[in-house]
Length: 576
Image (cartoon, rainbow, N blue to C red; front, side, top):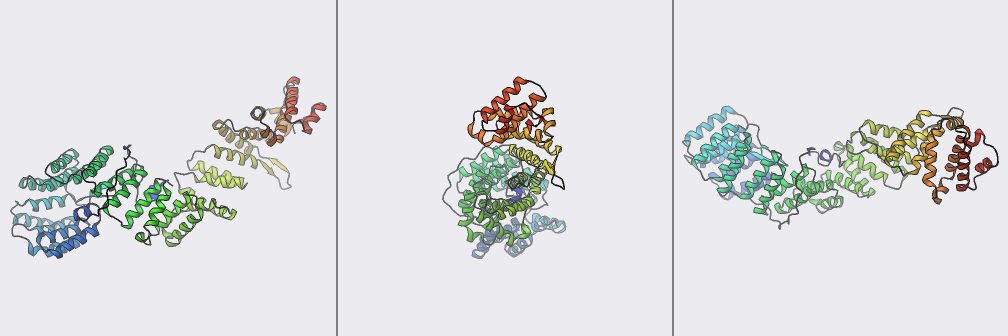
């Protein structure tokens, strides 16, 4: 279900519809240069790598700042208890008027909503620094923002304890002490954004840019703001500015990928994901899998398979790779590989199965050459169909049952299709009409024919709709005629004339078409006999009767029934 693949291909994806966004232009991907900067790694959500770098920095150069930075890494990763351990180790190295690590300890209590500890310790560090240290004020103000974090398109505080008013207060005090500090201006932008003042937020970001902040970082932040405000074209514009400023700035590639995913531009999403992986050197399994998923959503099924095959070792034992492979192989009409991959997935992770697994498995079985596999395939489709709101699997099911002459099941499948809100296409209508037509010929316990007028009426109604959509398809007209004919005894059918216009149209549609006349010779004979009898018994128009007889003999010169009619007077049996 490309279908609903936002909840299926990547189960964390939510189907959000945004306004149109300008399509991505292909951006030349610079040579890979893995990120080694902890700040960038933190912004990418690559917390394990960032923490490793920060720990190494402490080991190489233990200091007030390196201990704080190590604790800060854990704080940004959502691990305040671990962060506190590093801060506490750094407290003895704090300067008298710069209690940086003590501030870190206070912040860990703040984000844990431990007001008793946090308030007391924040007061203590502010008093100890005389309220004059811009760095201390900055770190406290930043903590009150809850640390805005960008992950998979979201832009929200890491912690639920954000207090925009207090953040703005501390940050403005910090800015007064250090008017040229770009980091403070950037954090002020975050605080104003949380305070629902996006205009001022962007102004603070622009100030950070003017003060020398990494332009790529600032443009990304502005892009994030515009994204949250649903001004997606400006978001794209700013992310691209970030890349123009520094083609190695990986976060912007990732944001573009996530934005394009959310507006259903999967080709662009896949393109920017691949560029992000190359620029960032980020070969984490989750990113490689995301690349495969986006390529699948973009209908580039072979690329999805290639990504998995080329990175199988890195992807490890994640069973989801077998799901994506199976879906892709099913779409590539490689049923054996699809079946193998999906069966492997279902064996390894049965608890993660979802309806689309059975959809693709069913389609794979239906494209094999085995009748037994066809039956198994439709069983899987029937399991998937009730949950699929984007693809009409009931139509596929009906097609199978119609082809195997199981008309009651075909009708039931198409009835379910309507119940589930799908609109029947021309083929559905034709099959519905034809299956009801076939079911119109019932038999009693003695094997005697019993006409089901309700079935014939349903057949005519469905075929009428199919005819409206495809007026030049002769079989539709023919079976409308036959449904109106066989619903009654021959004499009743002639007398009520319901089949007349359809027989006339059918004859006109294949007149002069030699191959069709051979194919439908029996149906043509029935049509001519019906029209001859109609003008004999209903209109009593001898001229019209003679004209239809003449035309019938011309088109079917070897038909014995028409020859017999031409040799003698008409009878009620002429139309049988």
